[in-house]
Image (cartoon, rainbow, N blue to C red; front, top):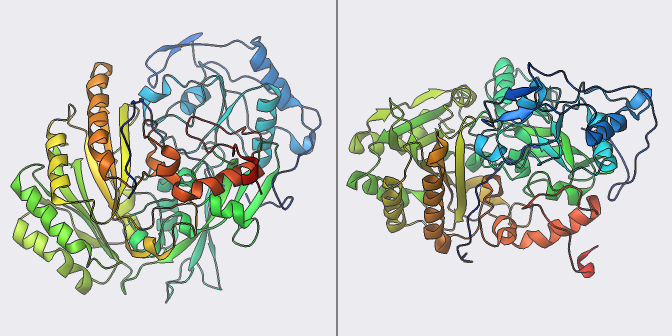
Length: 559
């Protein structure tokens, strides 16, 4: 097991949301695209005055005038396209416009404050994305990609750069049938029953709503928080309530398209550009290009009635009973069937949003198999609340309360991976004590259980290396007033320092800029190969942020 030493803390985190169009281009790397001239592009009209107070940033945002030279450069560059490739993404949003304020509305307002972009663009197609990247290169600006708005460290914003907000025009979701099976049919096996074509601006709430409208027995391997963007979730691996049954979200990616920094659009799947396909399943968002569309596998519920046993069992958050519950869970883990996900969590989920210790239960099988798995918890431990019910999994998922969201407030987090044996009763007891001392009642600690189908692949079969872990832990502080920041950040730093000796790595979708040796923590031995693929698809490191995959410094690493 590799242990990590503490390092200095930062105040940002992200779940970068960028997704993936099905177009063809050259075989290796990215080659240049053409462009020629016509049309005009305008700045968006201001909402009211030249100064607009943003509820997101909590400050007055001065309206930038069109005579700003860099903005004028962007407008001119976007206008430099022929009729076939003309910019169709509408006006350019700057401070004071509704489009800009929408773009900087991410889950954590505290992180957004220090990362305000120059302008926000809303591309309507891969061609628009290519044109926006060309404008950024022409005007010497960096680009960030926003698709879900769940970027807690605001890595989906680039200070003084261009933000591509993909939600406005690229939030589509389509179900398509496969193997002569209509999307309204119930299939008889666990092969691909249907596929999902998702635009880069879609969130999981959009996906779940589309599935419910057609066939609730079809299961996307998606995010537990419906407001998370599909793209960043899948690109970072994608740990789901259904992952023990069907693998990670990235394991269910069938095909993707990506716009390279030079504007070329490339298609990738298991047989076409397999190196890029490997990298996009766990290599993290924003590292290789702008993904504009994804094709995902939809799975079938394992139960005969196509329903699941889902919900929470909750108790008082602290005390000996919580340790008894942990003792029970630790004894169960080795015998937990793949169809069962039983996540221990401390969440503000009580009637008045008070903290509780809970097990989130997702049992993807028949009732006669599921009921005995939770009977002891219900009968012996007498939960304060029991929301278990048998229903379509997707129906439960769309109503899942977003208690882990900051909702445009303040947040700071860390995460880690725990190998079997690292998660002990003593560690759980120490976490209970630390949580008692947390300065905000909204602070939480939650675990995603490993094993099952997650472990069916080897650590280097995709870019996601954490195949053999027992659990992923997330520690998150959420607070409401700016003066509470120092205490909550210090609390997360303290918990991180306690956890580091026990961790084997960290989960890139819960990215933590203060995590030491992050390259190995997120990617393990796969980092060197990811650097090689970065060189092939982004040789100038145009896509960059503080924890982006870097180009290899040793030329011998380049294939």
